[in-house]
Length: 90
Image (tube, rainbow, N blue to C red):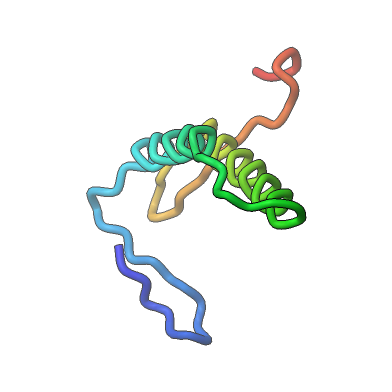
């Protein structure tokens, strides 16, 4: 996959026919786990809090995408993420 957009153009990605959306979901799960294992660099104070907040958001984003159900139909990738509490989910 290669970006085709220039600096001021939308970043359009060309997807090969071998693209598997479920493999992409697995990569996001792996990234979420990597964030959990990520070590804390030797920083203090405000920078430490910024790093921890960024790690929390990274984990949240990657974990949500890792929980998605993906489908690819007619060149359109759809990701469905159920954000309802477990007792309300399907």
